[in-house]
Length: 185
Image (cartoon, helix red, strand yellow):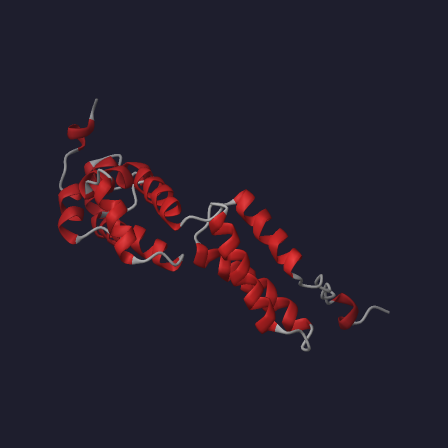
């Protein structure tokens, strides 16, 4: 007879954390993703914490020191560069039509300081109205809805979508007040 305990998935024992294993984890992560220093630190610390949870006698402090050493090495080898990461992410977010506020919040979550974000944003061409139009076109809202009736019925919903995306009220109103004929090519 199968019991409830038989149905529960078994926790897989994690491999032992060593300095070499942390290095391999970090290199594998960097091979797949561009990362900031603080983001990679968080990824590696999560692996250490998961292992330490299963093995209470594991020395987390020593592993944290290994992480800091590895981060220094990766920066020295130019595998990690916060400035390069910021430039790439800002360019990608702007290309996707994301507003400045969204970009700043996402990069702060990844451990990038605000001065660095501002300096990169200043070098980019950024027009909030253009980005809001791009998002409205992508989501088929505002002036990109099928007819005048659906535009009027969904105005508040469209406004909420653009405001939640991070655009200011004036920009949102400008975009929603545009005529569909303005965009015919």
